[in-house]
Length: 293
Length: 307
Image (cartoon, rainbow over all chains, first blue to last red; front, side, top):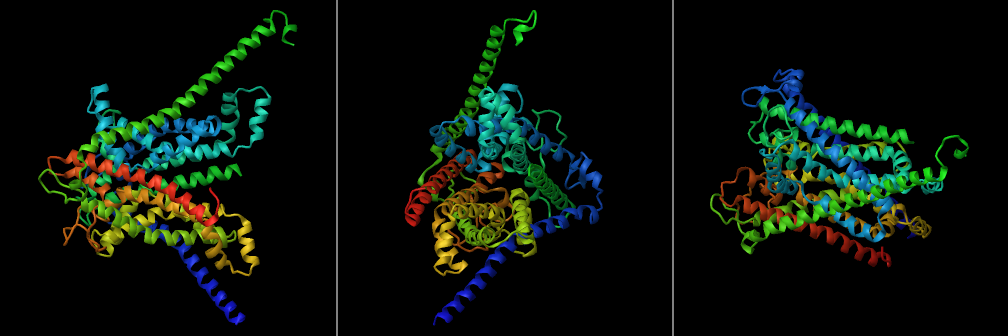
């Protein structure tokens, strides 16, 4: 009787392990399939439609139906909007991370934290809608311009990456041992001197990860950008003029590009480029964390 | 020391003004950090108030349950709200078991080794794939390769890929919060590892697990870019607005907000978008509050102590 039960438990254990390992393997399979399918479909443009890689990366003329596949305006738009976002959202996010880890009284943190969580939860399409109906008219009025463009996109993105940067930089600062704070205070440093000269350097690799993940979020963001960027397939020459980005152009054109056409393949190439950037950022994070240990 | 140097200012006045300057910088920095935090909260309040002011007049019973209209004013978003929940539930059916099992494997079973490393790295990579790229993958596989065209199931599977890593992280964190004594006590009573996981570890982690599921649900509910080219940007006009066929087109509310501002012919497109944005915001708030309440209740019931 006991032996039978033990046998059954043993069998259950084996079956369970099978399910656990299968589920884990799904993660590996999923990313492998994503990379595989995008690598195939994203390179069709080059070996099937005979567009050269430099023409795609550096060409500035884009006409999907006319056979012009220069993606430089979108690459530039993505990089500039992301750069602008990180220039504002990076320092601001780290500052608020400092606030939560070093300054905020417990009760203040308990009220502010849930608010930041709501900020994470707001869908990107809603950010875009607020940007389009509130921010764009505001910019138009202040700068006497159309309103949509890289400035609007950069501001919306900087707000959207804030929660990521805040929570990750707070975590990075919290793991700095207290002995460093005490040592710094004992040497007569003010709180700000401790933060700027001891804590930030000590947490630098964690803060770098926070900023890199902010970049990853910004460069892949689609609808918030599409709604406020103005969607003009031209090289960006001013923060106040309409531009386009890799993500927003894919959304704009995908519905029009027929299956099997070079037009559609060019959009897949842009998606592949986004995937490569994301993977590059992951490797950068691994590098930043390895340096610490 | 310094006073021994000829011609140097008296030490007291020098170090005092220096100290005063440092204290001033410290005060300014403190004020700035507070201002930064408060400005973000202020911004959130601005967004919420703005969406309520803009959207409140669009909300009516007819708007929430009615059919969208092709050309006339006064269309509703009933099918879209239904589709949002339908796609959400389909997604959870795939996401929760796979990611919880994988999280259990990594946290409780796997020793350090190559497979564990590979799964961790895959999860990190999956987590950074932009949602539009995931949407194109769904388009290539489910829409084109499988010939499903735009379907609720294809959308749900795409969203599953997008949310697997988040849910796995939530699981790992929930399990790491379970005290080691629970495992030891269960094993000492003769339970196998799986029995320990099923009867001791998972029940005591149910609070944070549920919180995680609800928060991930909020994210799925508002997802747009991954759905436009997988679940589609139109509703199926089947027998009713509430179409349970997973192989039919299923435009969700978030996608509707996108397609309305992009290509709608109705004269009240802005009004519908305002209403949709408000419904999305309210749902996010509900998901957030529910996550907190349910998580706390379940933890209390299963472990007998407040978190």
